[in-house]
View 1 (cartoon, one colour):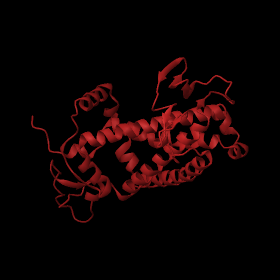
View 2 (cartoon, helix red, strand yellow):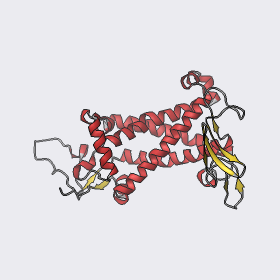
View 3 (tube, rainbow, N blue to C red):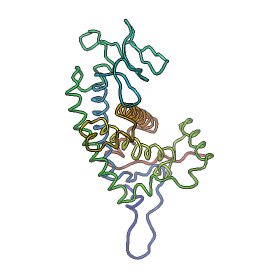
View 4 (cartoon, rainbow, N blue to C red):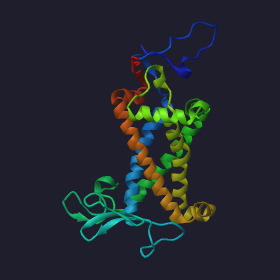
Length: 290
């Protein structure tokens, strides 16, 4: 039998003893349906957009700052091949990436000189047109699902109640304690596991209200049609090439967030975490013995 928590434990009528405080080992209802749906729709959407975005990047694997950028201009980031070596160049730093980036073999064993390998792109064979079709279609899925999630999350006070940091969580000593606990894999147990910690709150708020809006706005800035309608976007981001660079950096930040998120799920217990995001039910970790 699951124990309701949060809003689900609130009732009306005569004053009476409420449900017992959940303890380690209890199964509780953790995630709302809106949160679960948004999570899985966006998990698929983001992977498609990252992979199709890498296909688009393969058409011109260089990034610039400013309004213009062509092969002869100085690129602050470039992924390519020099002779028989693949390399990633960031400023004056060069990192060899042979076999992974810049120079790799396709499914048939043929050497290819493109930034991202076939297994990381949609489609897997080079096609800028198809990559754009995939990217633009799922960009609108991301926009509408994001707007819907914002609306519902503010309406049911999920953001205000669960994601905004409390005053005591802003203290440096509190941050340092959570960093040490995570480094030692000491995750919250009992009813404390139902609350987001400050590191999670900062990560989720950054993704929801910084990375996602920046990805959408810089993506729009790269569209000539949008430039004609909203030229102020070019001024806001310092030109189309700067917008492209910011778009790439935000997408990289999103990829890093996903990597850390998956790692934390594995370390915290993948079955329990996955069940909570599929069914909403979560078994509280048992309290540690002092």
